[in-house]
Length: 250
Length: 234
Ligand code: HEM
Ligand code: FES
Image 1 (cartoon, rainbow over the protein chains, first blue to last red):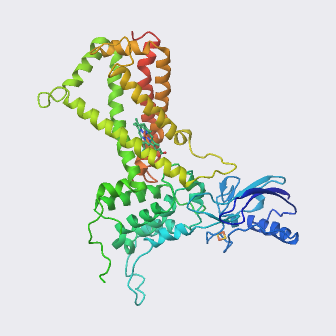
Image 2: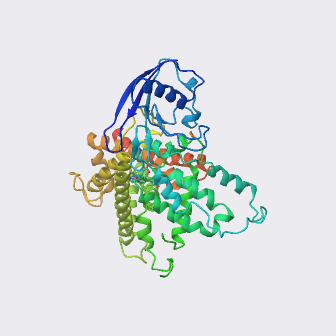
Image 3: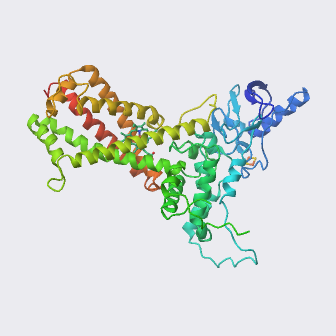
């Protein structure tokens, strides 16, 4: 396959970027999108040009590092991560636009690489369970009903890739934050910090440059892990409940 | 040094709510639902226009006497006006502030963007602006009668007919009611989501109710001007 790629090139955080066109030939339909970019980069390096910078790590859809917007869609046309997107979903001769996540909270570092540490700050505010250290507790010490465990797991699947923020017209982090809040708030282990967690995490979210939620639903459509839109409703309920109970942010 | 604790005076409830995006959106949802409940009652009142001037004008006078003798004449009416004005202002201010934040959070567009959100969802802001302009016009037209040259105090039926005898007014009214229908189509479901009343199981039912409410209110509010247009009401 041959493709025309238009890729966002930006040398550093403060420099102006632009879409640059590349003709890429000899692409196998079995290549992943990242392998196709590797293939382009090999040619760029051989020609003495600067390779396209992009984030990646596991290349098996579990680390969340590899986000980019392909033809206006976060992670491209399939509901998966960019590393698991294969070139067979494109047609020979297509023109493909590749851009970084666009959000004020995710500044571009270089080319397609953005800084997602705003997510880390949200997690740092309450995306954990405080436990005393010591011997590991018995596995059956805290019974968790199966439906609750399933619900928690469905939300624990979030890999923090940022596709929700990238797809949202408001650059909102509500789906990400709600995945983390719901994951821990439904479990008995998370119960002691149920109120402070949601208040602190929503507070930390608002302290970054994310927008608010207009219930557009673009986030849940883009999520490679299928975090449902109803998670946001659950987080809203947890937040309002905690607020009415008189909780306040730290 | 003492350990950090949460025993200091916590920020006020209202402050916490208003300064968070989730809380401010909840204010929009509650005020939106208050206005929505009012509109259902308002629409039913309007439909009395089809039963003649006597019944419609009688209804208009009755509204002023609601709650008597416990309440003084018009106290109920003024309480409703105050609550609705507060709702419109809070709703509009929250919408404006959140929209500014939203735009700042997403300054750059993608080259190709396929919209997956519905038309109603994408037109909430401009639709809201149309509604705000309409509310101002509507009060000047049929409450204070400022912009209704042939109107007389205490004769709501005749004033309504006089207002809709002007085609431009009818056209603006129709546009505003279509915007209202779209606003409610997204807004009712959205409010349930914002207030945490939605869940995967309830989602379809809530969307159905939102569409039904939107259709009911749009048709109900469009009936009187169409009645005047076709001569059924004169
Ligand atoms: C003053 C004029 C108005 C403006 C500027 C306005 C604007 C907005 C905006 C921007 C939203 C958020 C949209 C979104 O989340 O996607 C919204 C939501 C809403 N509006 Fe309005 N609106 C106005 C009047 C009304 C009226 C008259 C009603 C009564 C039916 C109403 C009911 C609602 C409801 C129920 C919501 C949903 C709240 C939520 O998403 O939680 N609005 N409005
Ligand atoms: S590289 Fe780990 S999810 Fe794509």
